[in-house]
Image 1 (cartoon, one colour):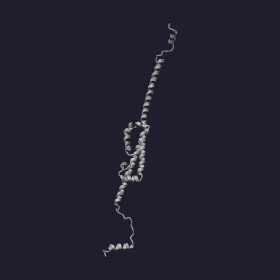
Image 2: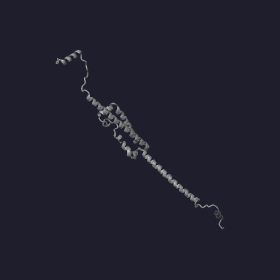
Image 3: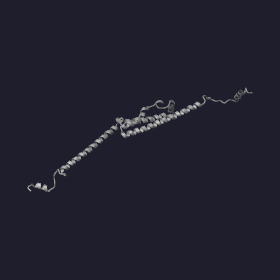
Length: 206
């Protein structure tokens, strides 16, 4: 009863304590804690985006293509024959043909010229996939397309090699069964000559 009027108003009025369960100070603490958790989530997301960007940049540039796991495990071994094949083969050994005659036959028919054009396209595509900056997925699509084209090239080269060798073998067999010497020109005999040959043939019989 002797308390000041402000105290009596507080006692009979609302609870305005800042540290009560729903007080203003406790609400501030809860809001601060919530903001701290949101800041952690934003930082984690930004770190993830940064790491992914760094990884994408590492795979994008052609300077790090040799370190890619998929390249090391598969495509390096599968595409190695392309680098080992000569850029411009000049003989049957470099073309991986059976012999010189097969090489000459394919060269005469223009088959080697067409195969050389296909080889140039394969090597150019391979070089672009290894030297250009591009997304990792696109790079491996180029690897795969190059591999398929190379397999088709090797299959076609083997087919022409076997077919030409077979034709040359047939030609050799055929030539071996033909007469060794054929008359260059045939002149029909006269009636007198025919009679003389007949008489010469039968002169000892009669």
